[in-house]
Image (cartoon, rainbow, N blue to C red; front, side, top):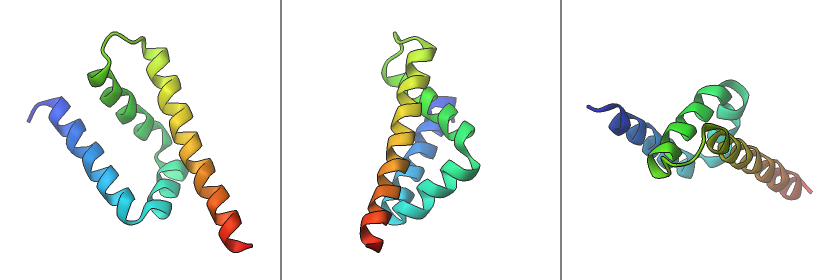
Length: 81
């Protein structure tokens, strides 16, 4: 398999798994696998937008990942009230 196909497969598996157990998978990735997840996100977005600079892709992925975790924390706070 080509590298981009492997990356795409990993991203698809993560998205599928996160749909099933969304909260726990996102928190595990945030706590233990932040940098590798960021690298996969950057590689994937580079395939979609090859003209963008690396710093733009990292910034986009970083903000997206932090927003996702913050939204989950906010949902937990609201559901526990």
